[in-house]
Amino acid sequence: MTADTPLEVLIGEILTRRGLTLAAAESCTGGLVSHRLTNVPGSSVYFLGGIIAYANQAKIDLLGVDERTLASHGAVSEAAVLEMASGVRRPFGADIGVATSGIAGPGGATPSKPVGLVWIALSAGDASQARSAIYPGDRLAVKEQSAQAALQLVIEYLTTRD
Image (cartoon, rainbow, N blue to C red):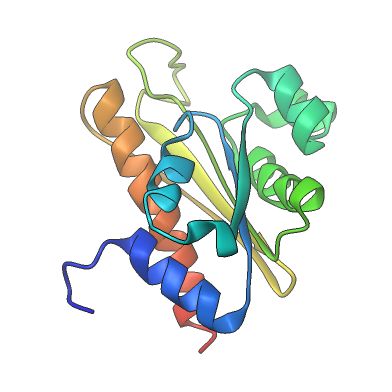
């Protein structure tokens, strides 16, 4: 592999080698993380599926996000993405779940949550973690940067457990 190897290819190689599986819960990325993962030939071995839970009710019904979490913290929060990442593992029986939730813009911002704010989380049997960033650019740029960051979080998790 070279430094130019896409993250989704590296993720696939590591997951396959270790016999691990992955599922994605996506809000602001609208399936872009899943799209990138499934661009890799043979990804059905390790990528079990994704849930695009754009509406809050979908996050509750499909991912098991607690209504109280959404009421007190909002969908674009550490608490919500951690519950999304954990929640997506259940229906698929996945070893690892990754989740995204953010404000891609141009609307939807609040004083405390600007356009470009994205939370990303990972859930696995031995770890859960979340991080946020504010990405510049238009809606598509925010989505692309968010998907890249989600894949980066997965590869960081996998490579720190070699």
